[in-house]
Length: 113
Image 1 (tube, rainbow, N blue to C red):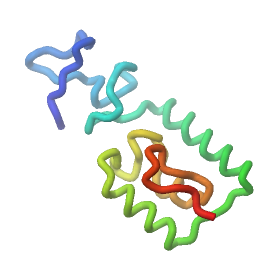
Image 2 (cartoon, one colour):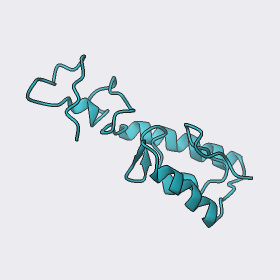
Image 3 (tube, rainbow, N blue to C red):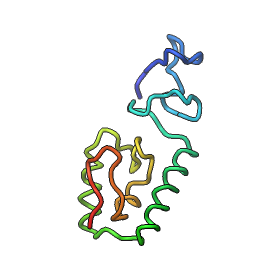
Image 4 (spheres, one colour):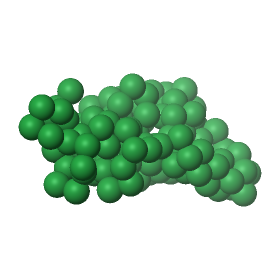
């Protein structure tokens, strides 16, 4: 865990780290690119709902097991990978990687045909 301080956080002091850097539900200004950032539950639900809606509209195409493993391998090597979640799109990566029509939010992998 990093002891990052928020310049706008009244809860961080010289003795304590800013809890908003670890829990975005505490601070909406928390930087999602920091290593300890975790998206809020609502943010995860909204992003996953958007991905599933797009997936259903596309006819629910499924990636092959091989394509899923390639995608997850890319994710595992990414600085935004956090316990099978992406800190950028907030999705559960094994589920998102299995949806052939989905792509990485920072273009590390694209939809498969």
